[in-house]
Amino acid sequence: MKKIAILGSTGSIGTQTLEVIRENKDIEVTGLAAGTNVDLLEKQIREFQPKLVAMWTEEKAKELKSRIRDLDVKVVSGMDGLLEIATMEESEILVTAIVGMIGIRPTIAAIKAGKDIALANKETLVTAGHIIMPLAKECGVKILPVDSEHSAIFQSLQGSHRKNELKKILLTASGGPFRGKKQEDLLNIRVEDALKHPNWAMGRKLTIDSSTMVNKGLEVMEARWFFNVDIDDVQVVVQPQSVIHSMVEYVDGAVIAQLGTPDMKLPIQYALYYPERRFLPGERVDFWSIGHLDFEKPDMDTFYGLALAYEAGRCGGTLPTVFNAANELAVSQFLNREIKYLEITEIIEDCMKAHKTIANPTVEQILDTEQETYDRIRSRR
Image 1: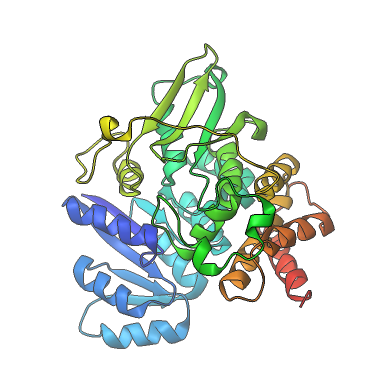
Image 2 (image 1 turned 45 degrees about the horizontal axis):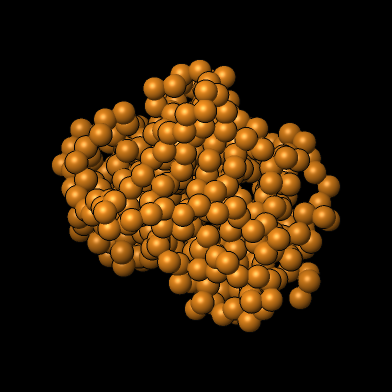
């Protein structure tokens, strides 16, 4: 039996991870953590019977503890709770599906405890890749990508063991709901418009990030660390049908791609069982129905959040943290209808220009930079 713990079990990736586990009977869930969704976490606890669970706030933890008092389950809370789940002796794999930079400390703790990481938390590598990847190597721990595109790259690299064989990474993007639009077309975009992704079913924040292509920028920075390449060796290719999930080009000109339907359960299952492949229920690619595949160059003038991501990635240090934190708060403000759609990237650019980069930050400096970025944005109002 594989034994896993999940941080962010009530979110999009967390719930889909549990769907995969439901289909396979040889995984035991040892720990679950959620933010505020007590109702769903209680249902998950009763179905999967973990030994340890966490809620982010003490108040929610008390409510959950009262609801499951008939069960022999320990309830913890806050960062201490996440760290306890990340390092629990019973688990072998930690699925980090939690949103935000609160995922950094538990990931580091889990690596030090010898846990393999199924990584769905972009912020961990975007802001602390220079800490995470060397630490994983030192501890002999696998970092397995759960993100669709990075899983596709990881799969396309199987069979190649030499870094000098890889020419570049071709990171695909759907283009989001506003593909083909210009800046003037985006002046009056509403929240409802930006949440209509053409291909993928995702959480609200990630869906907005996809519409601005900031998400693709975060993936570029993440790929730089995952696959140990220069930032400019990661090339974004718009592939509107979302059939090709990403590709790699080798030095001899060969391009290897991973194709499939837009279903996150495939990369989740691959990470949990790597290197084994298992049957996964669901639709299959029907090439006769597709008929053709399209490829486009990304419009970095309209979606200049992607250009800013390359700038942040080239500079490194604390600048990717500023990029990520500014986007996180700006998207929250947009979803709360406090700012206009185009202000998201304007805020990111403003924060990046104002920041004095620290070249090789510690975790504390990364988290301080996040807070300073939040403070700068809030002071604008």
